[in-house]
Length: 301
Image (tube, rainbow, N blue to C red; front, side, top):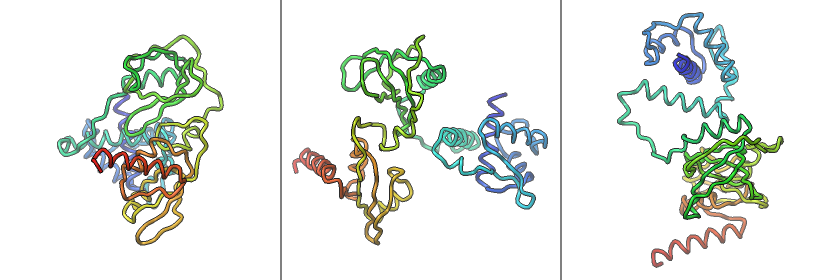
């Protein structure tokens, strides 16, 4: 029952968010057609509807208010458009509800298959919540055999549809990144989790693209030149929050960033081929050129 109500809350948030403003009558019409409406109700009872509004505010922090002339709307709509866990959770559950209501379309909606990491996700989240250290057995791509060690998880991050954990490992001075799909086993230890009280996950990753981090490396000013078509992609989905267009012409655009040029960023730039050119810093431009020469060498060029 709890799961059913949770899905109803997400459905109601999604409906009001999509319409901007919507009357209770129109909400009832949509509800009567929803697959979540297992009782085949013609309307959401008034008391139940307002109980849902209160629960949504309590669980998600999303306030649904009423405008006499236009209907119900979400007061703090901007919170749904952010990059936090609330936005991610709502998007995931909204998609789940949509697929449930479109069961006859499943064969025409394709998803990318990625290595599963959900097995360990709840274990790590619970360890962080309970402030417990972990004993982890991990198979690194750089080693032939797995290793077991004590580690203290700082935060979790999604990148390219994979989950990663930033953690401090006993015996290592610097924080390290671990991919959850390479974990073989995890044991929660009866030892306190040691994480600095002032650690801020968003701030820690603010100077990076992706999940590879550069220790003792300061951010650089990166300037990229994009073809007109590629510029449209960058405008719709920036490479980094610091992205700023400093020159725009009919043929190309130039973007400036402030971040650490890491391996992840290099791979991203190379993946866009001739549509993207590094103008500065010079040392990073040279690294890109060297990689292109190596690639051509593999093809005998």
